[in-house]
Structures are given as C-alpha cells and as structure tokens.
Image (cartoon, rainbow over all chains, first blue to last red; front, side, top):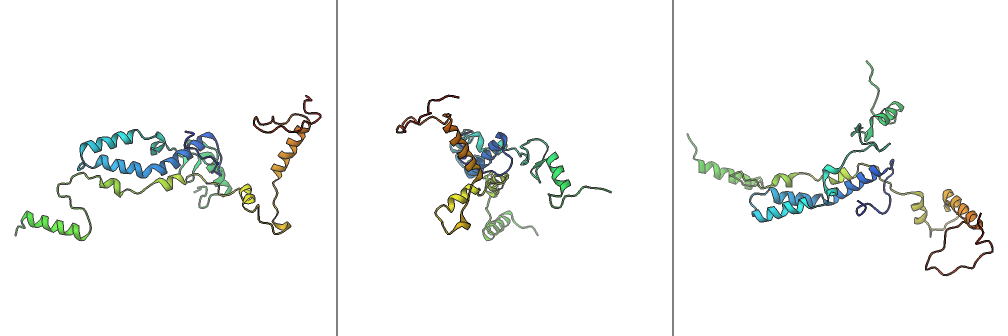
Length: 113
Length: 114
C-alpha cells in the first residue's frame, strides 16, 4: 500500500515491485508488532472480562493486512523471485548456484564424493 | 508418610515468590505465553540489504565543506543529464514552464518545432 511505502528508496538489492512491497510489509509488521502482541495477550487472557477480550479481537481483526506476519514472503535479493528461495542465503536456487560456484558465498562448496 | 495437599500448595506458592514466577494453581490461561515471545520485527525487517548512503548523499553532506580541490566531487550522470536538457532547450523541446512561475524572457527560437 502506498500509504506505508517510504518516500525515499532504502534498498540496495535488486528492486522490483514485489521486493518493494515485501520490504514495506516487513517494516510495517515491525512497527505494529508490539500492538498486535498486546491485543493477542488480551484475547488469550481468560481472567480479563469477556467484553474487553471481544473488543481486542475486533481491533486485531480490523488492523491493516500489512501488519500481519503472514503477508511476508521471502524473496530473492538477486532477482526478486519468490519461489525456490533458500532462506539461509536469501537467494533463489539459480543465483545461489552461480554465486556458490564462483565462491562468493563463504563456507559453501560443491559436494563431491 | 503422606504430606497434606495444603502443605504442598504452600510450598509451591513460596517457590513461585522466591523465583519470581506467577502463582497459578488452577492453570488458568493468562496469556503469559504471548508476553514471553520475543519480538521478531527487527530480524524480519532487516531481510533486504539497506542502502545506507549514496554518492548524492555524500555530496550533499559535504556541500558547504570547502577545503580544496581534493574534496571537490562531481556527478557524471547529473552533468550528462544537464547537458542533454540544455541541448533540448536549445532545440525548443524543453520542459514546459510551471503554471504559477513568472514568465521568462522569450527566446528567439522558442516556438520552433522540429
């Protein structure tokens, strides 16, 4: 959503709209995480009055979808691909292979036995 | 040698006060599980590599900092762009004037179309 997007570009990796969107979602999630956790605590606490818990439920469900962690999807920093991304290296399988063969990724080596 | 239930409960209560735990003998759901969770936000938000500073930022930062020729900076792309714009203006193909801006002096070949 444009309302959350930063006015100035703050990324140095490959950029396409998918990455831009995902980056915005990550920042929004980090910003609203404490609020979400507080609401979640109120909802799960059975010792609190039922009315307060219901209100918290409503409030949590009405928060913007960008504040949800399930919206976030790891993307490849080399090409923006969303599938086949190795989360340890933040790269899709093919750029990972290319970088690994070139020796750009420390500690990664082609297996041979 | 059976120990009475009340005694055990008292011991449990004392233990919780000593080790600063919560005393919850009925096992009510108090949602403390949520409060114990760590915040994942900072780790998640730092997934993509951030751009810290560009040459433009550096130039702007040292704009008023004149020491000598060694500190002078230049931006080749910007210079090329200005040159391109200048050529376009000469050919009468420049950007239109802003609506509210004061009228500039009309040049001779302003209206010429290629």
